[in-house]
Length: 202
Picture 1: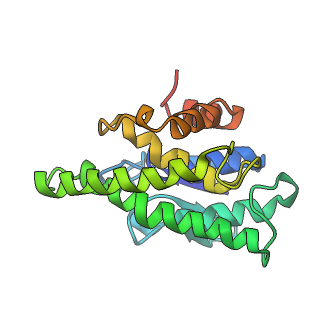
Picture 2 (picture 1 turned 180 degrees about the vertical axis):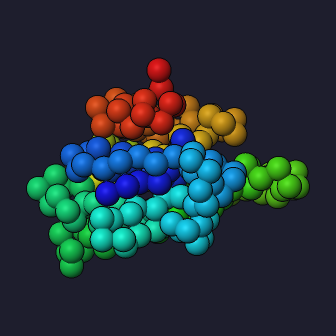
């Protein structure tokens, strides 16, 4: 398998998941802004959407969209418990979290990285993020991870998205349960390996 990624982007989520799963894979770096790979080739040949992540298989198929990719990874190694069994209510709870992260957190960060976004748009995004992180903070109270005591692919994604806070000057220490969670996840060996591989940690 090949994981197409950009350092620190949402592709960090499946990158962490692959390392947690212990599956063999190759990292292929995409320029964050250009639609090209390091060898100069057009990334849109791999993923016509033009953005990461994309997971390419030996048979030529390509899977895109982070929440789909991380569930595929989890299902490859059920013994790792990176996702509850398909069809269980807990699996739907996992999907509930993945959908919340992708639609309510991930997309709300987007204006803060957009140079063309107005100050009003950015201020509105920050206000929304505060409320949405409030919700996450309450959910994490008394829990090690989103689903309880077990680390899942939802944690790969939440950690990735909330890790952007440092770049956009959002102080997560305002939410002690979130700050503690971020430290806990960051200390995991697979997370450390992924951060180092992407040049995000020395």
